[in-house]
Figure 1 (cartoon, rainbow, N blue to C red):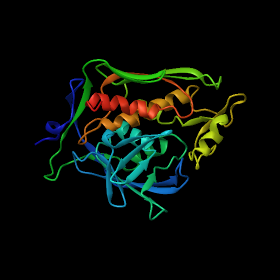
Figure 2: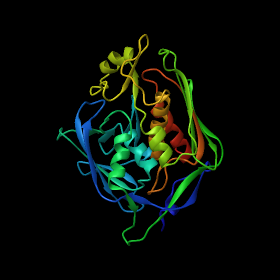
Figure 3: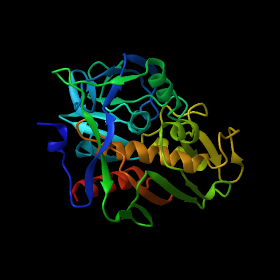
Length: 316
């Protein structure tokens, strides 16, 4: 049976042929760095995988699929949980893999805590640039199954408008022939950020690498102590985030883009919606995705994104 016959779907989505073959990495590639929230140093090794296996994490020989079924609500990041093992801050890595066309990948994680059941992906400079560079370092190749056969890649097309919302934030997907993303944010507590909107052209790997992947995670300086008191951002610094003071503006300029915070939300969204992927097929829905986030510490942007993925698949 082909992978497309086993795809979970709903009336909201049709899985259509793309005319492209599923891909994987041509070789293994490794990166090491500090995690944003735990502050621990971990090593991540991206390895080729067979067609229809999809993307999954291998932590202490425990396999955690990069699937929305295993996504958990957690502050300021996306977490996957299965069988007692938890992988945090997966969104930047998965965003880069989805946008770069790495459909099948085994993601091995090692860290210094030999007994723990929690792992976290390194943050690097707070963007997806390092992961895009890692993929480019080894390149892509056609993925084959156990019989040596290639598999056509399918893509989920949204059939009718669908949306999810939490408080005064929302995300919606509208039928479209191509993937477009329009995102708005409103940081009323930080005037230099304020209200921003960014809309992508039809999204492909070049648009992603040039206009989205370089955008870094950001925070409000006056909220740092509150986040650290909540056990978060133990590894945070001016080297892995852009920091904005409500009264003084950006503390570590220059920005890569004038609307870098808004673009970073698109980076996160792509990573979160990549969890819709199944059996090595496309995760990001073919739709015009429109989102608006009224931002404050503790509000659930990542949870809102995964709500949309769950709604598309018929889980909620």
